[in-house]
Length: 122
Image 1 (spheres, helix red, strand yellow):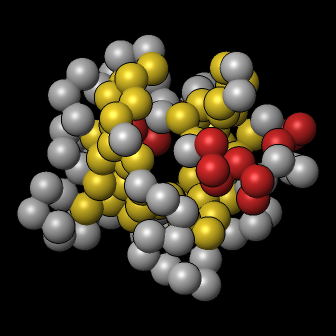
Image 2: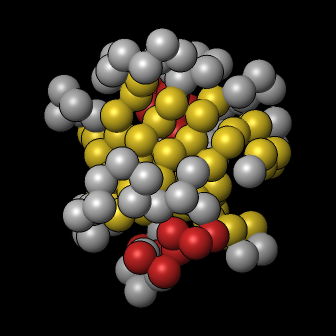
């Protein structure tokens, strides 16, 4: 499903797309992407609703670097906001990159980045 929000256009995939034992979702960065973050898929929110009052999550990459990113409520959606721009820049995200978000249950997402050819780059 395509989703456009604040100049961010992504394709979202269902949770558990890649790992049956972990809660996950993916986003594909498409043309029109800005440094505003993507929305967490509505079907995924049930996994974090009880903790979301804190409004801040941690994103980490495969090298162990971490970014603290604030979540913004927009209607029934949660959007990665403050701190996303640094994550985006520091990981050199590009159009067509696939971002796999693996949720650890404690407000941390391990994010793997794959290029348009499917090679893991972060």
